[in-house]
Image (cartoon, rainbow, N blue to C red):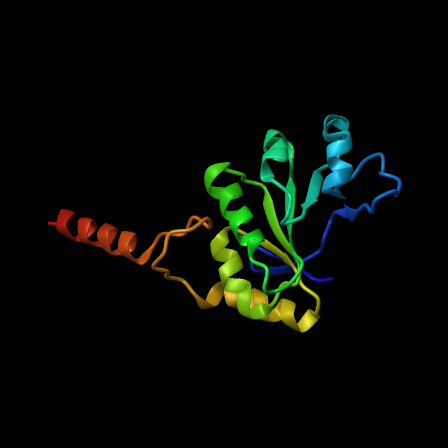
Length: 171
């Protein structure tokens, strides 16, 4: 699957470890939630970055104690009609101040990409190479938004207010 990260097609450095598969001794790994929680402390002490694939029907409270040590949280969209991962993303960014990579995986569709960015996602696993190109272009397409959200961008109102203050401060 192509990975779009920060608006560019990127190489996924993470080894996706399936349930029951051997965990590499070092290097970046991405684990299913249940596998991660079985022995989170030991996994976080191994050399290399650790990420977790978190289903949208699982409570984030189980993940919160580890957020400051996780490099990636991949939130799952099992269907394009199921938006619970949007809520999880906003909570991770806004309430829990997660600063690592927030990745959307599963049914990631190009017409929902802007909404995913606004919710705080900075990486997306996409199914098709041509979608990866479209997703990368979308990042540059929209620069001003009205609603504040988890992506940290200034809103149109805050930009106008800042402009007014700078104009009134000029001699």
